[in-house]
Amino acid sequence: MSNASLICDLARQFYDLGWVTGTGGGICIRDGDHVLIAPSGVQKERMTPDQMFTFSVDGQLLDRPLDPALRPSECTALFMTAIRLRDAGAVIHSHSMHAMIASLLFEREFVISEIEMIKGIEGMSFHDRLVVPIIENTAHECDLAASLEAAIRAYPQTKAVLVRRHGVYVWGRDWVSAKTHAECYDYLFRAAAEMRRLGVSDASFSSQPTDAYARR
Ligand SMILES: [Zn+2]
Image: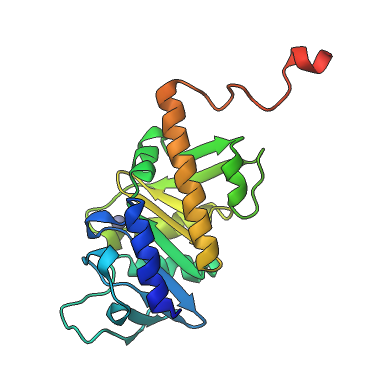
């Protein structure tokens, strides 16, 4: 399958998850020095491979679809930031309700630990404290580029940045890794919101042995 077909295929799956509804969200896949980017403002679950834009990794437009009405994704500058700074092979921008709600539960950083799905994030284990920076939203998506870059530089471990009242940007070394990360983060965002709603704290029923257990 070509990367253009793959973007269409993944967008259909992400649409079903509620990540790219209402024409929001997006995805890009890098192939060497080229980056394939979906168009802006289209029905993401109905995209076709001939609607993709091709950019160089330094942001030059190399190829565009024949349809003159199509414009490259509003996320282009943000995708390029993750590709440049993290050598990402794919970047997913999700408008998931779980990401949006998670961005309202924490002030500057989303934090969670001791949840199995943390292991799905490269380099993380069950007991690690997973931290995702939260940046403030702007009226126009392209204006997020500077704060996204600052967050990526300030959090060298992170594979995602939450955008308050908006969604999340997630990346990986290739599309499989980016998709895995996006699924695990989304699960963790949802888990945090559900735990908060149920009054369950991170520390409740900790896997660390209690004093009573340790004395036995
Ligand atoms: Zn967005």
